[in-house]
Structure formats: structure tokens, C-alpha cells
Image (cartoon, rainbow, N blue to C red; front, side, top):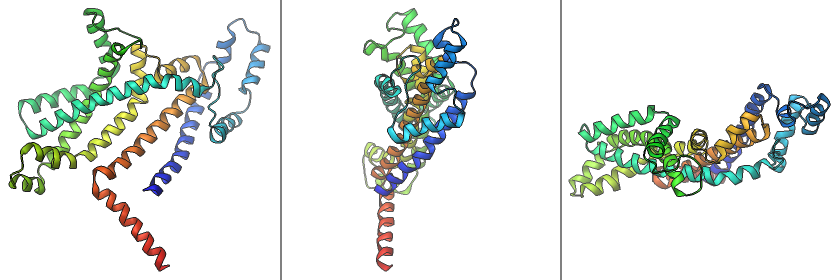
Length: 323
């Protein structure tokens, strides 16, 4: 297991370098000049050239990229913001708690609603609840999160006045964003849970457990659900990774929450390349670690996976002894 984790961590390095190369290339060829935005329309060409030289923007593309990637690999330095002059990692870490809170709340709501509805729909297949849950999940998957967030603002903030429309000044400010993120994720989790449970409850060991007189609730929770969790956990892991990255970008923008997503959008508008690079790379690192955590979690949920690692270890030990 430890070798597997180390191997996955090493494989993250070329993946993250590929992410930096793609994003850096896009920012390099994108129209707009951040130096012109910094100095204003009245800046002289001499001032623009001097600031470009100071920021290293007058160097060739390869030199700029190697310098940036080398700073990350050797010093874990993501550079400094063009506009604030502060380290990018400091700016990101200041905003990360809001993004992490949104992701955790949205994912928790998705799990509670999605797994519960999926199990009930599978155990009551073709019932009214099953049809209603399936139709609702299709709507949830098809509905854009930013559009649903705007509907919540119109109804709960403008019409009823129950909840604040934007900001992050207290618990109430995170209610609508959490619902916005949770509904879309719950639809995916519900569909996966339902299909996995339908396949599991038809297995022979489920019929055996029922034949031994086990209570139906214990059969569903202790036997069926536990064995149906592997694909569900995969979807939850992907969902949580998306919540830490792409999904929260739209949600934070709609609800004006000062998180990494909104910071990324604002930096793209101003062509603040170090911040854009840092935000994207930070999200990619988080997503990679979430996927690694999901893979490790498999071995604790499904004993068969853990036994495979143990068998591989024994084979390598036997081969080493024979050699």
C-alpha cells in the first residue's frame, strides 16, 4: 500500500507539470496586457517596458515557463500577484477556508440526499418514489448550478427576504450556496447508488441473508449497501474534487463569496498570470489528493482490494527469496 501511495504521488508530478504548461500557454497567448492595466492608459512606453522587464515578461516563452516551473519544484514558490505584490500561495490560503467550507457542506448534503434516495428507490423499484426520484435526479443533473443559484436568490432573497443574497459574513450566507452545490451532486450520487444497489440486491448472498431470517433493514444496510459503495464512493470523490475546483468557481461568483473560485475569475479578467496559474495548480493538486484518498478508502471498504495488495506483497517477497 505504501509503495502504491508513493507511486501515485510521483505520478502526480508530470500531471501537474502538464497542467502548468497548458495554462501557462493559454495565458501567454491570450489577448490583453496586465502591465497596461497596472499602469493605466496614461503610462508611457518606457514605463511599460521597465515593468515588463521587472516582472520578467519580456523574456521568451520557454524562459518564463522554465523559471516558473523551477520555482515551484525547487522552492514551492507560486510567484507574486502582479496587482497586490503578495505571494500567490498566501492569497490562496486566505481564501481556501471559504472554498473548503462550501465543498464540505455541498458534498455532505449531496451524500445525505443522494445515498438515502438511491437506497429507497432501489429497494422500492418502479414505485411512485422511485419514479419521482429518478425524474428529479434527471432534472438535477441537467440543471446548471449557476442558474439554480440565481433562482434561489430570486425566491429566498428577493421575494421572501429570508436569506442574504451574497457575501460570507455568517452561517446564513452559506445556506443557498450549499444547496446549490448539493442538489447537483445529489442527483449524480442518487443515480449511481440506485443502479449499484439494484445490481447488489439481486446477488445470491443477499437472498441467503434473507433466507436466514435477517431483518430487511440489516440486510440492506449491512450487506447490500456496503458492497454497493465502491462506485458510489468513486462518484463522491469526483464530486468532492469538482466542488473544490470547477463547481465552486461558478457558485462563488454567483453568490460573491471570497473563495478561490471567485479569486480565479477576477484574476483572469485582469490577466494576473501568477494568480491564475497558482489557483489552477492548487485545484489540480487538491483533486489529485482527493482521488488518491478515494483509492486508499477502497481497501477499507472492500476487503477484496486489501487482500490483493497483500497477495502482491507476498509474491514479491517469495520472488525475492527465490532470487
